[in-house]
Length: 134
Image (cartoon, rainbow, N blue to C red):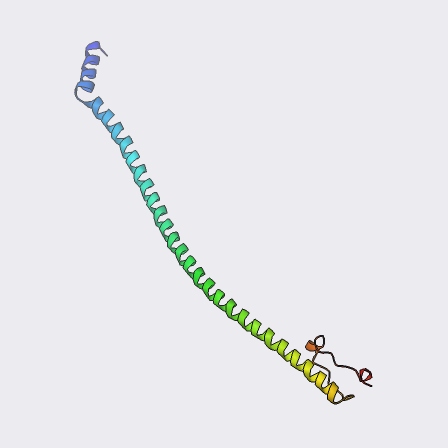
């Protein structure tokens, strides 16, 4: 190739805007890839934000449900404790009444046969034996 042809070719390439077009094409391609990556990242980020919002709502619902359950349990435990206290009072009043009756029977009817208390009260109500009375 002659030097004149080379010069003509170089002038055509650089003078006709071919080089500028090639450079512009490379830059545009890189910018397009970068814009595409940014768009994908934005879509992924929005997906994570939506998921976080959904989890936040679910967590709020669970907290509300837990507070309601805790309130119901507190009311239930308070009621059960009151019932238990009442049952204990009733039981000890019955034990004391049975003791008084046993004492009264032993005093008024010495030697009388007094039935044994139920198994659950044996430790609380003592029945005097016949030998205890002359």
